[in-house]
Image (tube, rainbow, N blue to C red; front, side):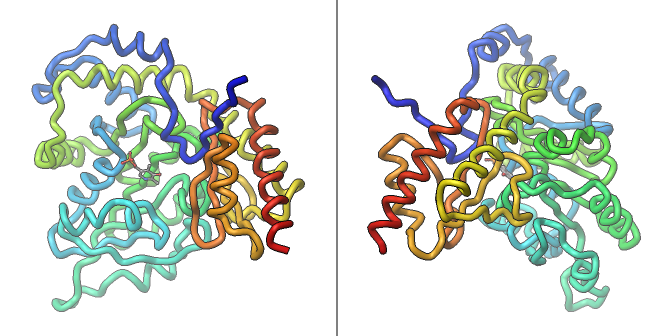
Length: 353
Ligand SMILES: *Cc1c(COP(=O)(O)O)cnc(C)c1O
């Protein structure tokens, strides 16, 4: 008997389906540096439309989407406001310093929602020896807080506040599709409260590559220039855009199932072990489960023991492990995954006592 591999280290691990590969092989293509790839153009128009914006730009990665947005909204020597646990701050290799030439001012938050008072204090007064604050970044859903969803009314009040202070908002919406799935709020509603958004096709949606930066015509024209600067001007990339279009058309409506898998896993492991769910909101809002393993069991030991039984988890902060559910994990694998986790946990707990 072959054991099933249950790999929940990330939602980036999904592999393209046969029908997605077929759609890719049949894509009409052209040279996108000339603006002549019909499939790229169709994807960009479609996504701009979904989010209620004028224009959009296909980029290879979410990091590039975020960094193009930062470059577009700022001047060298400026400062941008980001959340302390944000992807932009932790996982983008200090790129804002390298590419746009700006520094980051980090504000801690409750589950990704920076307080308006906190932001107000962070905005620099116009004195010559201060950097100029020029952008606020938010993250939807919030990765390190455990897939938490920024409420629409929070985004609305933040946007109004930012407008009062003449500051644009960039939304790192790598998993904004999951926010839509969790709330049944349409993308264009979220689009109202950000000047630019970057959205991933290669996470829960299941495309092999690609993100899209969305914004005004002017912002996207500038972003196209910056994309070329970074060597991201691609040619017959419609083959990749076809995967993205296929993912949106065929996979997007299934995202809520990934949330159900995550919730079921969280509920089974809290029943069957002493661990607790450490998502910032205390519960599972989308696909990410952060597991606090407690004082007696080392997360790396559980991770290793689970891996021996083909359940792959990733390390989180401190005493935590992380699981992210996605379309290549079926609902009926969840009880098995939970059983592997709980039996490993109990064994290690007994060894330690
Ligand atoms: C994955 C992710 C990104 C982009 O990652 P890439 O690997 O560059 O596509 C950006 N922000 C968040 C919150 C993410 O989770």
